[in-house]
Structure formats: C-alpha cells, structure tokens
Image (cartoon, rainbow, N blue to C red; front, side, top):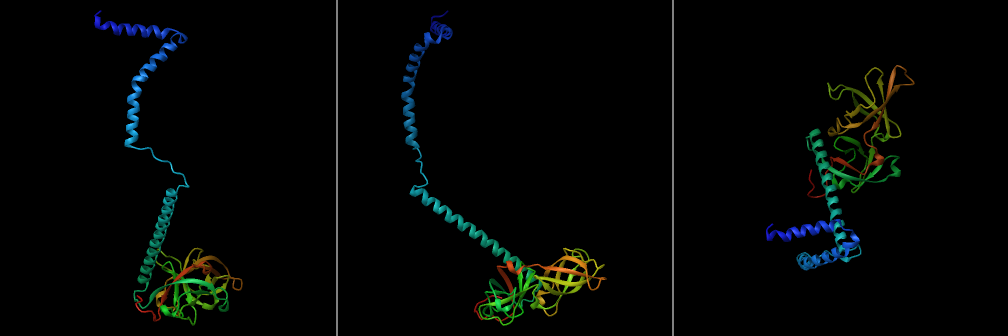
Length: 286
C-alpha cells in the first residue's frame, strides 16, 4: 500500500468501526465532530443569507386594516365595477344595433325614428294594464305608434293624446286595441302557410280566435300581425304564441285558439317606439 493511500484506508476503517459501535459509546464523539463541521460551514452560510436578504428584502405582510391595503382594495373594486358597467353598456348598444337592423330590414322606408322609452308607473285613469311611457311628442312619439321589444316582438301601441314628455302604452292583449287581424304561421320553415284569424282580448292579457279544428293549428305556433289599420312597418311582427287549441262550446264543429302575447307588459322596463311624428328636439337623428 502506498503511503498516500494510508489516510484514506484508516478513515474507512475508523468509519466501519464507528458504524457498528453502540450509539451510547460514540454519540458524544459524533456530536463533537458534527459541531466542528458546522463551525466550518456556518460562517459562509450566514454571509450568503445576509447577501440574499440584501438583494431581495423580505416582504412585509400587510393585514386588511393596513391603509395601503384598504386603498388597493378600494381601487380594485372601483375599476371592477366600471369594467362590469362598460360590459353591460356594450351589450345594450349591441342589442339596439341588432334591433335597429331588424326593423330596418322589415321596413326600409325610413319614415320613422326609433325612440327608447322607459316604462313608468301604471296609469289608473286609463284602465287596467295600460302603462306610462317616459317619452312623448318632444321625441316624435304620436298616437298609434307601435312599441317593439327585441326587434320584432310587438308590445302594443301608443295611446291617444300623448303629451310632450310622456305617453301611454296599450299592450297587446288589452281590450283597448279592439280586434286585431293576424295570421297563425302553420309552416314557418317550409312553404310559409299561414291561417288568417281575427284576435280579440279575452281577459288576463290573453287573446282568442276561432279556428277550424282540422286547420292544423297547434300550440307553439307563432302569430304575426296582418292588420291594415296598423302602421305598415309593423306588419309581420310577432304578436304572440298559440298556447291552447280546443273545441268551441257554442259551435262544437269549430275550434278556439288561445294566444299568449309575446311580451308581458307587467314585466316591461323599456320599449322601442317606431315614432312617426315630428320631433321638436333639434339635432335628433331619424
């Protein structure tokens, strides 16, 4: 064995002997040896820890009562609410653009302007179901103008004698509209077969009409306007949906269809009026 290899062999031999000795015999010696090794390694480790903290200081933990945290939370909530409000405004503008496009395609004459009218309190003197609109002749709203929701759903007509800042809405299904000529769409996608009917209010906001029992009328079919006494731009718009077809009591060979209006006036917050009058506000767009 070379002299240079003797220290390594001695260290291996000592390690083997120590490994088989009881812990109570060599425990103290090993603790002392580990202390010497730690003493040699700790100084550089401590210095490196100080260097790390100097390069990257520890982050201060701030609680919810910290003024900086309160201000950050306030700013976050403010910008979040503004973001949601902006999204809602964009969605509303897109809805109005879609509605304008649908109305323009149905009536390209352009002899009207669209007026957004908020729904106010009910008008007790005008009869049950009639509601007040917060738009009037100042924006070109005239008696008989049609009120629309979501492009082609008829909500009703403007009542008589609107004033400058308000008007009344007589909803579909109200007896004040009288009888309405309409068509039940038997086949919307195919040949477009339609059954002419005359609707009348039967109470509770619903409409009724006589139909042939074998005419093919079924619940779920759309009912569209075809009444010459209504404005031209309203023709073909949706009045409601057939919800029931039964046998007529007085005439067993005839049927009776019940129509539910497409728009429930009790849940309205805003309608779009196809205003045909002259607006008194300068700079209003048609």
